[in-house]
Image 1 (cartoon, rainbow, N blue to C red):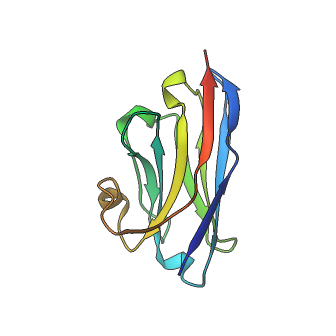
Image 2: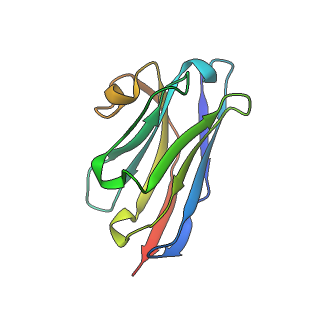
Length: 125
């Protein structure tokens, strides 16, 4: 069993930065791929980024490439999402996810077993 708790969301102006964190409990954290998804009001949840458990493979949705960076620290059981050059379209609730998967498969939510409760990111224009 893995429990995920996100933090770091907030209100930021367009062009600003935020870093989200997701703290995981459970002894098997280091064996799971970790991902970030987001959901805006009235829209479906969508994939943002993911990192493999070995930290040798990352994958991003096209709209955040070059602006967002996913990383993890297995010693701290934490995964991060550094978000730079934020845009109003990035406004959403951001969710952390974990599972026996690959970053590419996580894009389709394949293998996702655990979800966090979400943290709100609001980007003002």
